[in-house]
Image 1: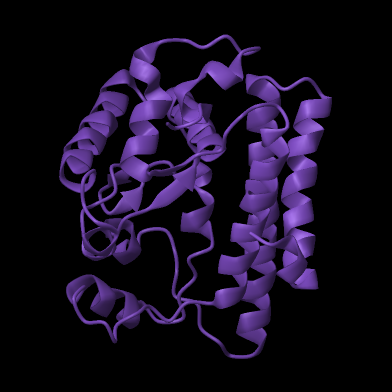
Image 2: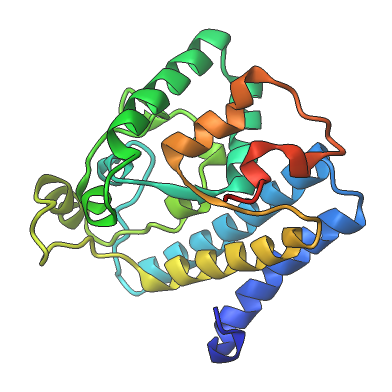
Length: 234
């Protein structure tokens, strides 16, 4: 990414993400500080989305996204390492062992089908997210940035995109601004934690959940760089 080509708005959101990561490092990067700044990043995006939604309502622009609408939850979902690190902690704290095992099994089953797909095949694949339960996200409060910033002005367009993945003319009627804002925040965050030798790798939802679980093995909170989520891929 060439920062010189970024707009002033892009730079502002990039700086927000970078500052959060740098704050965590200044406060001695650990499990707790990383979780805290990840939550702060997500809260900041929620605040932006609430403001956008209110502005859209004032201009009679409809936003159809809500918990329980899950057309987009069947497509390939991507997140980055710090999001999955936080997401798995949320799952551990809020779900039973039986529920956690069920999520991991669904993630494994999906990854067996998606793991070797080409990019084109992956974009067309439709499988329910491992976190879906009775049609809703079971970890909604900790969902990754990609899920938060996917704001559609037409549920019908999302349904059509789900039902006709091979139709190249199909695409959900998404708001562009939150997509770009979230991307820039994560880019800044990624650069920031890189200063602590953490590689903020991108993963498919299924892969990220499985790696975050780390086969149940604990990681020293002072050695986050040794967690497989943050290790450099060869």
